[in-house]
Image 1 (cartoon, rainbow, N blue to C red):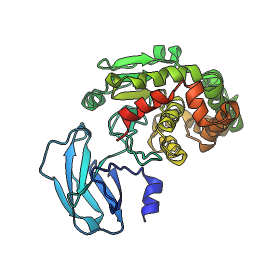
Image 2: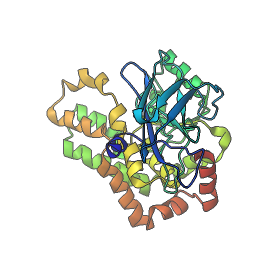
Image 3: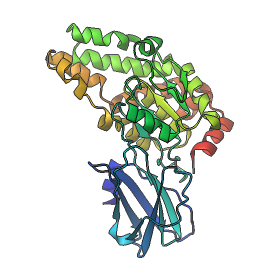
Image 4: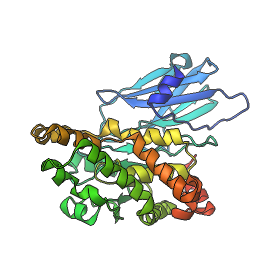
Length: 351
């Protein structure tokens, strides 16, 4: 049961009380179809007693001392019922007043932004956890609704790092003015011509795959300097919370996020899990009226362009190994993350 849960959702862990006989506690937080928070946990070995849960809009500040929910540890699940879809909730779980976990839902409710989610909760190889509410990732913010603008306000976003090209930002500028917007363009190469080729029927599914492979290879061979400039912004604690954004929050954002998590010593399988999660949160329904008039080749090409493909990220990692010898060397030599800078990142972003 535990393995199945962990394969579907990110485990989120923060150990506050620690001892040699502490149980292994895994917890996740999900949103159901009507917006309630469903909190699940398992302990190994099975533990008896009470779990107390408090809620906060700020994962670093739990001021309400009265538990909002009491549950039997053996129940393994509790639901926080709410009609608040504007502010984001985080939870502190206390098991028998000895061991605590802070958890949040991976996704955030957004009605006008694609692929918006929190990078918190991933566990590093040495048992530390990425802090919730520090780094978010998403698609472009050019059609930001009034409600989503308020949601960004509530998240306290201070810095938006826009990875789109100058042409993309001119066509679809960010419609949010309460954060510092840093544009560090990552060129998309031949992909820029892809939409027109698709519409004109000059692209097959195989062509689209080659385009995507070229883009991920170029991340390593041509765009390393730009990604290094982006990661430099994460050294300044005053920049947080940070939102990383590109067109769909999948490729440029996906590669950058993979490197950030690698710098935090997050295991490769968790990095890949985060990358592939884009497939759950990219909504293509807005393209339905266009796609239905296109050829089968064109439709399949669009699917390729809008899908996070494990093979593409693997290709990038293989290119890194070929060019630099290892991911560690790429982080230090290519992305200019010295040991001191990586420790700084960990101090800011890990519990």
